[in-house]
Image (cartoon, rainbow, N blue to C red; front, side):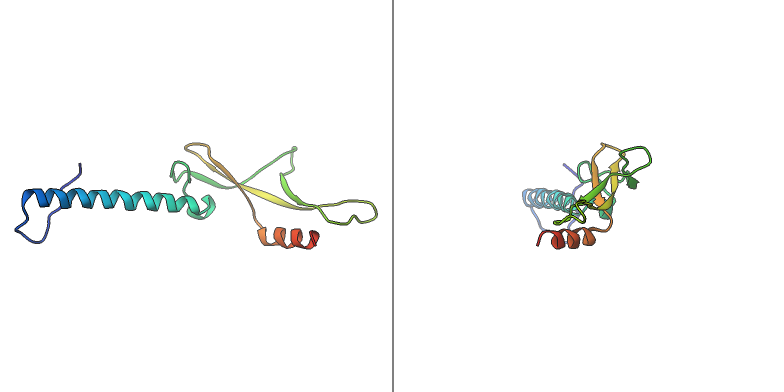
Length: 123
């Protein structure tokens, strides 16, 4: 079950001591589970821990490449074209990869600009 708890007071019956010990271990396990789940709400790049397996073997930042020598980018298309050309604004992606299970997340470094550009183009 776990190591017994040494209470700073005497007079507990064995059954009450066993109950308190079991309850303590249950609450401790519950707290650990809640802390593990809370780390899943934080991005891998911030927590430096994998949200899938909780490993600390996370490689970040990595460049994500498509064509040789070019990185994959998030494109925000303009609402109106300029001289018939529909040129998007491009934002490079950064990648975090877990070295234990392979879980992968992608991030845009300048996420505020992505949102501003998107709002500007969807009016």
